[in-house]
Image 1: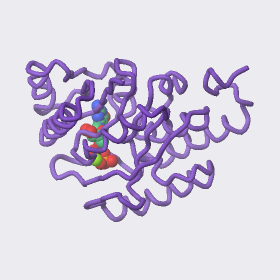
Image 2: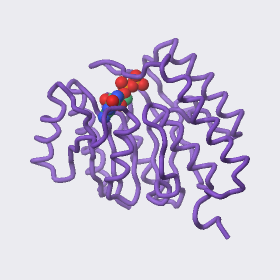
Image 3: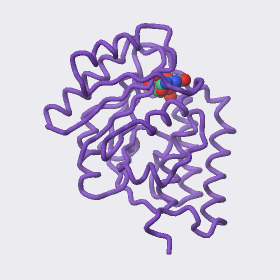
Length: 247
Ligand SMILES: Nc1nc2c(ncn2[C@@H]2O[C@H](COP(=O)(O)OP(=O)(O)O)[C@@H](O)[C@H]2O)c(=O)[nH]1
Ligand SMILES: [Mg+2]
């Protein structure tokens, strides 16, 4: 099972190489077949050059410019259109996700689960430096999602998850252009009939660069995508469920 690691990046020169090196080290130690796919959105700093240089010495590392005009969601979607693994993990470029967790994700997909979901809010998770206001809004948003969908899972909004290739096919086309993609992918995957396993993951707030999630702009977009998927789930009579579920 080859794992592609899609990393959207914009102006991450202070952390992109540490992120990539961490992934490469862990994948090679565990002898997991992998590729690292950085989707750059016209970074004005050295991000692109650094990744391209890394690609010259490691053929598993690639830098691709996002073909779409700007936005986190569109960049991730570009990565989901390009990856060539049997599974794909989405990871941040700011060293907030722990590459060691990719080993668990790979193992879960290898066991036959369709999705590997991390939770930063369960026993065994380690969270360092989460900004308080962001944490408060995060807990409310995830609580709301959990009430609407009864997933028994409390970290839907975190992008750092992994999926088998079939899942990405089931949930396409994706609609979100921004950070709301982080809820569209897992919610569609689950409501359209895919299995998931939850494991505790680590998260550390960035120490370099700037946080790009503007919570005020995103609220209505998150609500839109959550309600959209809720309506699809309850009203579409299973029209969009995974191919194997359809008669
Ligand atoms: N390609 C691309 N990546 C982005 C964009 N905005 C954010 N990112 C990346 O998405 C990830 C998450 O962004 P970050 O600033 O850490 O979000 P926050 O910590 O939630 O505020 C990082 O890897 C960013 O470099 C964008 O417009 N395009
Ligand atoms: Mg971040």
